[in-house]
Image 1: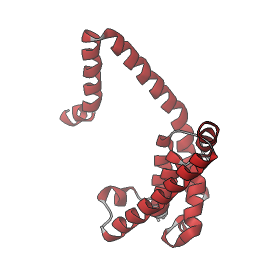
Image 2 (image 1 turned 30 degrees about the vertical axis):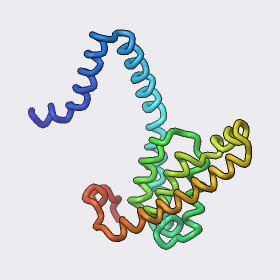
Image 3 (image 1 turned 180 degrees about the vertical axis):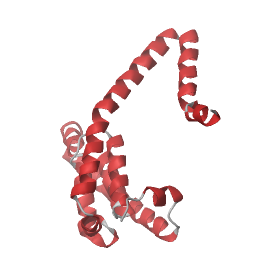
Image 4 (image 1 turned 30 degrees about the horizontal axis):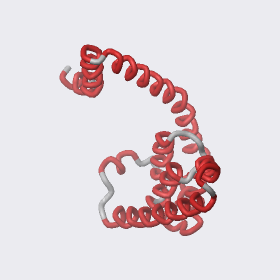
Length: 178
C-alpha cells in the first residue's frame, strides 16, 4: 500500500497546488488548469506516433547499422548525419529524447546524440527561416555557426566524460538486448 501511494506523490503535489490556487487565485487556477489540459492533450496526440516510430526503428534498423552510422567510430559522417537528423523535424523537443535514448541503446555515440538533441533544439530549418526573415541572413548564419560550434564542443566533452566514467546504472538497465 505504501509503495502505491509513493508513486502518486508528484500527482498529489500538483493537485494540492491547484487546490491552493483555486482557493486564493481562482482565475490563475483556471488558466493553469486549461494550460495543463492543453499540454497533456498535445502530448497524447504526439507521443503515440513517436513510440510507434521508435518501435519501427528498433525492428527495421539493425544495431550494427546504427553503430556504423552514428556510433563512436562514425566520425565526421556520424556528426553530420546527427545534425541533419536534428535540423529537419519540426516537433517539440520532448519527442527527441525517447528517440535519442533508443539510438543510444542501439550503439549511437553520446557525442552524436548531443549533436542530434542540440540541433533539434536550436538549429531547426524552419526556425532558421524565421530568423532570416526577421533578423537577416547575417545574424542567422552567425548564430547557426556559433551554435553548431558550441554543440560540437559540448558533444566532445560529453563523449569524453562518458568514456572516462562507468556507465550509469539506468543506462545499463535500459540498453536494448543484443
